[in-house]
Amino acid sequence: MNSNSSQVIHTPKNSSYSTLLNSFSDNLRITSDFKPSIIFTPTNESQIQVAIHCSKLHDLQIRIRSGGHDHEGLSYISETPFFIIDLRNLRSIAIDTNKKTAWIQAGATIGELYYRIAEKSKKLTFPAGVCPNVGVGGHFSGGGYGMLARKFGTAADNIIDAKLIDANGQIKDRESMGEDHFWAIRGGGGTSFGLIISWKVKLHDIPEKVTVFNVTRTLEQNATQLIYKWQHIADKVDDNLLLRLFLKSNVQSPFKPGQRSIQAIFSTMFVGGVDELLHEMQKSFPELELMKEDCTEMSWIESIIFFYGGFPNGTSPDALLNWNTTSNLHIYFKGKSDYVQHPISIKGLEGIWKLYNQLGENTGVELQVSPYGGKLSDISESETPFPHRAGNIFMIEYAVYWIKMEDSKRSIDWSQKIYTYLGKYVSKSPRAAYFNYRDLDLGMNNKGNTSYEQAKIWGEKYFKNNFDRLVKVKTKIDPTNFFRNEQSIPPLLS
Image 1 (cartoon, rainbow, N blue to C red):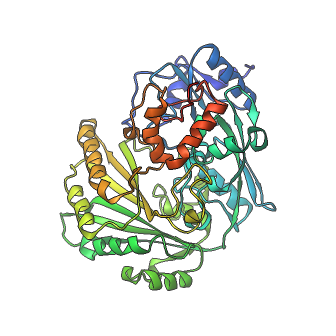
Image 2: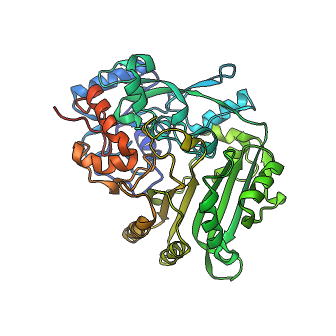
Image 3: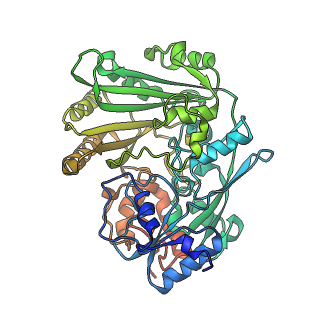
């Protein structure tokens, strides 16, 4: 490969191997009997081309890893012999403030991207996720929902070019890969269609100050009625306003010492000043009784720190540059997702609280409820593979976590129970899901060689009517299914 190959090839014989392997996941639920034969950390594109060639020679599957979150571990786990291409050394970010664009290598995190934008300009932003330790490679290619999504759409909606390496080891950009291929990687998941090296995105104007608040209400403070009302307005308020909601279990009740309660946290970003926000809230959601003292005006980059729970108050934005922005909690975790198109009734919400009260001592849950509408609804379902557009009020992420291995079965069973319970209140035919909250429960997998029929089960949940177009693109550009995992887009076999 080159004289530095010892620094980029890590085998179980190297001391660096276990450090790298252990850095991939905080989710103790993800385990496998197979360990990667090599963890490869390339420093340039030509090394990746050689690695693709070698993987074919030795019939080794590759897994591509670009960053922080991976709910099912598909970027570092396989049930067949494999090696990992870890893109952590490919993280350069070049920002053009005049053209309002940026080129970002796939191994960079969104926290690094946010920091580099703010370093160059206080008046530019990019819409992507809340957790700074997520890698842009996977996040952008699966959609990329965040606190600016109602204003500017998802990350995928703002991609204007990309560089990838295809199954033949060729480097392609938007022009040379063609529009179908370029369409597929903007929401259809990059790892089915090549190895993304870098993205070019468009940046957006943002005021020097935005306004944020986190307001908490318990069931004793009328949270059920507030959530019921929230569902009727969350997708219809001003596009500058994103009212996110967290429903937390097992929280100490402020009114009944020693008793547990359920909390609703209204976590909000407004692109504008506090007076304008208060006016909008008074008009659309007076029931929350928001006060000026609940709100803080801050720069957009400070809001990134504010919304990410992993940083103490007053943390400097420099913290976004640390690779280790994970909490290092090392917990067991299971995630699922749903889309809701009609408000859940009061009775329906009360059923959720009943289920919350059945949780064991060592298990926690947080339903993260993210509103749609605004720019998300203005874009047609077929514009990108990410199809969750007009008609959705909000998305739910189910985040269930526990600390002890012996609680695993009970906690996973409970996550399935609440998912089943909410079935009657969420989208149907298909019951939709968000690709970036990957969930292997949605369809059986077959050692990474998914048939079209099997894949259609989960594929239509993630991509709706765009699934068949993704299959056509895959069949054309990667007919041998070189790039694959347990939930990759399959080619149609001729």
